[in-house]
Length: 193
Image 1 (tube, rainbow, N blue to C red):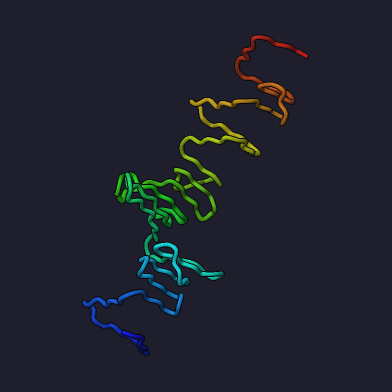
Image 2: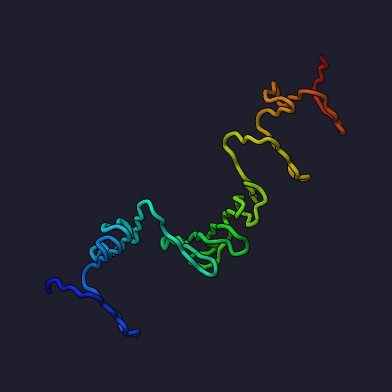
């Protein structure tokens, strides 16, 4: 019992376990194990989570790997589904993957950021700043310089007014300028002004 000082401590047995009773602190707050909470702190003497890293204004956390560095966020409750943040395996960039089975390692892509800053949702090789595979929904305005609908089998539906050559259409379809229709034009009434 009591306090002792050791200039150097070296454990060289490869098969034995070194055990410390109580907490452990290296340089006060450099590396701390709080035995009362089973928390580890790096850069803090009072870790608030199981692993708490406080770096001040210097670099934070880096995970190096010769393969694809992975950070798993795993929930053991309920279905046990997890998310995985990883550098992309097939392309350079960052991926967020979600598990496809409870407790399983099998994952599917949910989100990708490539080295050009393009974001893919359900798309691992985005060609645009936002590339979505599947349906999308916007509950407010979408502001775009151009709008292109390329589907030949699905109708594009607009819930309010569409302006061609005008930003303030006065009816469901407002056209400012000439128009050419290659097919039929059907109308219940037709007014020439």
